[in-house]
Length: 181
Image (cartoon, rainbow, N blue to C red; front, side, top):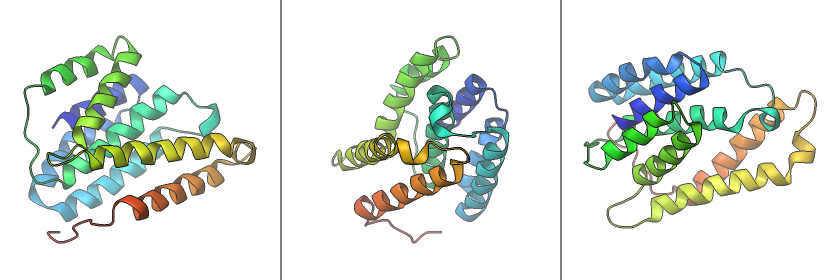
């Protein structure tokens, strides 16, 4: 549920209206995972349509993070079975709502929420996996900036980001449970 709030607040900060559909996604995830995945695909298409990004290197990083991370959290919370509200979520919610005034506070709250959301009770392997995956992506984008920052290079940037995402998923997420859908 906190991922829905982060998506709505992120949408308010960035200035897009599609994240107001996030509660509908949350409700569909409780009924059927298949309907949720179809709804999430439509949600992602609508986000991509409303939030125009011509070049990743010349965009506002805060706006990009304010859209991407809440969308990732929304997908993960829709696919999980048990997402209960914990007492420290009140602190995270206060940080997210404070981000409406101070955007950096939203980024800090989103980072804490991301780490909290992907942690395991048994180990911190999944938190480390997310941090390493994002670090590989950022390092790859930085190193290959001279090749990717060209006129009309947005399709190449999307292909690069997709290949890094597939590569990191192959490295880290080998034991993904696919039953139950």
